[in-house]
Length: 178
Image 1 (cartoon, rainbow, N blue to C red):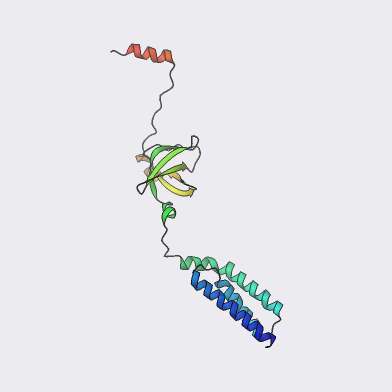
Image 2: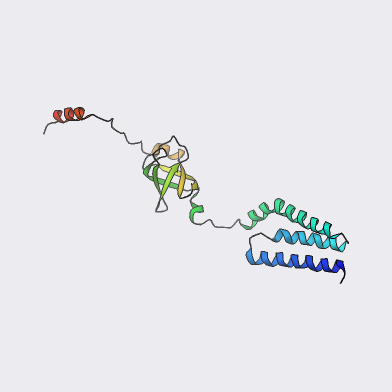
């Protein structure tokens, strides 16, 4: 068998393997190498040296990967339904426990489930009852921001009484009738 026939068989095997793996996985992982193998087959037919065939295989494969993968992923995944946690981003939630990043507290309800939440802005405290938008997810915490369109409908933060000394509390008790 001649060197050209041997290389032709090798590149055909690489091409067929790449296509078969792609068909089995549908992950857009090996189709780019099928394109590189096809370019190497053409180089083999043109009697290019083996080094040129291998270099051409890698260059074409990488070019296809970098320049067409994002288009292919977008095209093939356009009807993909986001599930589970992915579907939370962009939704609205209701704060059930005040969100305070400094204290590390906060919970929201979305889709009937309670989630730990954190404000996207560290210095903002979001009161219970407020409507928030889910911006992202970090671990098991939803990263949220108060909904600006519903800001007027959000409740005012609860007023916290000033701390009192024992003598002030006793004086207040004395003023109240029994």
